[in-house]
Length: 290
Image (tube, rainbow, N blue to C red):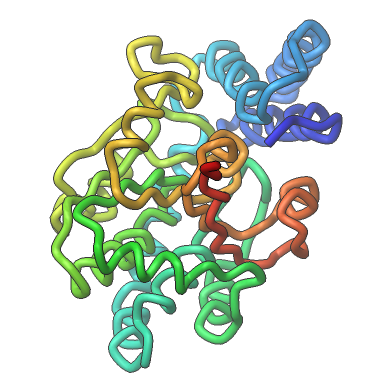
């Protein structure tokens, strides 16, 4: 997904939100905004929104000398998500189609997005997921692919939310044994899930065979979204699910990938032709062969 002018102003809001989350003084917040405004003015506004966002959040971390501005919020989100799992497992046990319900729960968990939302109501989003349909629902195609798949790659999005991805992966394994791979950020970036967040959510206890890391903008050793290595990861797996808006923005040129998210940003909603707040399970069009 290409950036728009709205993405540029959004990055300023994200920078201020990160500074406040880190407990920065008013003077430090002002310094962050002045630096980010200068950097944005000089940046290339082409490419994807995440291409703009990573340097912005790298600058915030550097200026505030804080490795993870959203660390406290991430811990609280994980605790809240884990506390919700028992009742959600009961709902799955009563469902006529637990896989479809686990996908809706996973998408509803995408409300835990501090890049897009300063506040959110997780309980309300989960209750809605138990009843509301997807605005775009490519479930039938995904289920058929999963029934014949030997491997699945999940690009995770946010801390806390990843606990609901765990429910999804657990449900997939009740259908069919397969190799599960989860991709997280190599280090802190907004409230995106890192390896530490994935382990806190218990993903190491459900049969995940490997955990990959994509760069958070600081880590030059980890591959970037547009790299040949990330494309190779995608090509090596039978099914690929990309969670959340940022993964949609970064991977929307990857054919055959399934995007699972809540459309919170008006520009993302417009790109998907859905309403703000809608849940989406969309398969990117596969390549055509003449």
